[in-house]
Length: 61
Image (tube, rainbow, N blue to C red; front, side, top):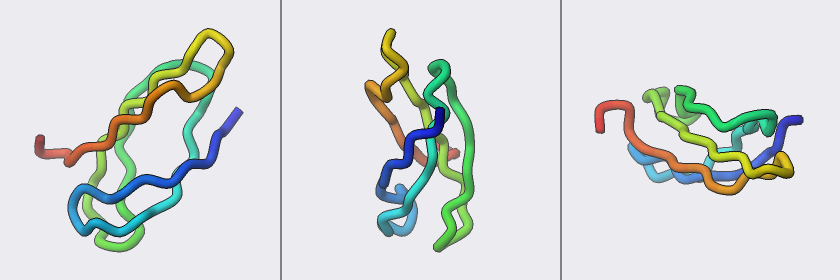
């Protein structure tokens, strides 16, 4: 199940929409659609399959 959420790009500051896979906790990299820089996402999914936390940081952090 994909869950749509909005986050702020850590490079350009724009609010962007992303879809998070709710099947398991995971990390992934997705380019910002505004500035095209790589954003690292860390999704934590709870026991019910809901998004518990989404940490967003620069790929070079």
